[in-house]
Image (tube, rainbow, N blue to C red; front, side, top):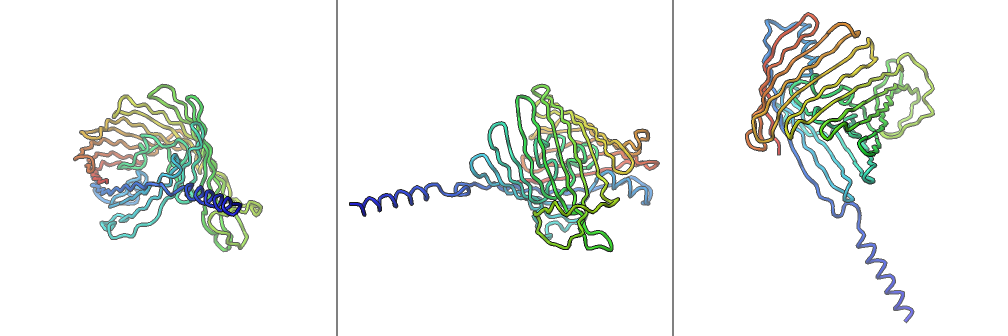
Length: 351
């Protein structure tokens, strides 16, 4: 009888462990893809260095780009996202380019008020906290409407925690990235970045966000290779003029007038080199299954006095079903003494 009782206990324990399973046993994976083709027609007499600098500052990137996203749900409320990209680098060869892993994100919802995000690869400030907004959608230019530039910087690996209470969301994140190796030295320069954000929901359709990013380059003269996510804090004792910290602060206001109409603006100030202020504003009406339009403008004020750069973009968006869209645009750019208009065309296919 005792032997039979022990056998029953062992069977119950084994059946209980088998029923528990692992966090990925019932996981489901969603796959999303997007292919973009962007062309540009410049209305200028000839190309020279000033024109090239102006085009570079607009953030225009022509060519073919493709992106594939795999999102897996684990533990009911958590998710793991992996993003693969292929870029044609300005030529029509993106389809032949190999896919490369550009981002990995693990998002954990601890409870209704607290969440955790870890980004071991390809981290940006827009990946953590509640930084994502309607004004960060990718478009024709990268300056006038994609939100403060601090949200779009590639800053290595990071982890963040967000806490929500009533109509306020507070987020704090820490990032680390390798900047490179200094000349005539075998040491490595790392960048430690601290990001903070406070979001206040003013009303049901309007919110105000205050953001800050503090980056501190750290030089290590050690010759150890500890792997991509090991951080030996104690070796950061070498002081160097290169290790000057960079600070950026920004404020974003955005409002949804209805399901498809949005209006917003942002300002950002940083201390990199000459103190300057960047700004942007936009208004758009982009229904998912109808004709859409928008107006976006932005610029940079150097030294808080001179309007060094600004641009205006008017565009329309034509949807052909739910998967394909065409977006023609007219852009006017002024960069110092250089100014010119440009016609742009972007087509997108998603699945």
